[in-house]
Image (cartoon, rainbow, N blue to C red; front, side, top):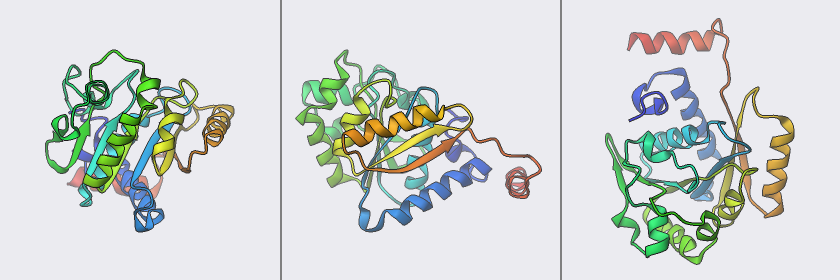
Length: 229
């Protein structure tokens, strides 16, 4: 597995891991009565850390006792499978949609995490927008609702393709990833406008690539705790 990207699985006491746990706590606080069983994670532009974020978020929820399904719906540039050492040629979401394959036949188990399962993007060369806008995709999400406590879906950036806006119609909430000091304010505003146009339920913004001062007391505490473990 990608030990750098999946820090919540490989370094349980790091400051970054604690930040993901805090994010999980905040989402749980909002998620009273499981209002947000299915959540989409996207970004305004590329390289903002959305796949790293959703993967670590899935891990932390599974570690807390929830049965989690992580779906890679970025059929254009899929990365989730690589993070979890799943062969990129393996069948996944696109194969399900094209060939009507059952969900449980394509699920990938995650080593060390009994409650986390991954559905990769698959290996079919297809039109992502048409597939994600299909009744078949809606049926997959409906089936997943019956089998999992939480479904997290990774999609392409909002401003690059229509995919995120389409998928937002079948989820309960959307989380927008924004890279600190990299993503331009105008891009974030435009991304929100695009989501608003389709009635997406934006429930939060996740700030990534934040640089902490090394003399910060909490940073120092987390680092010392990690080194002593």
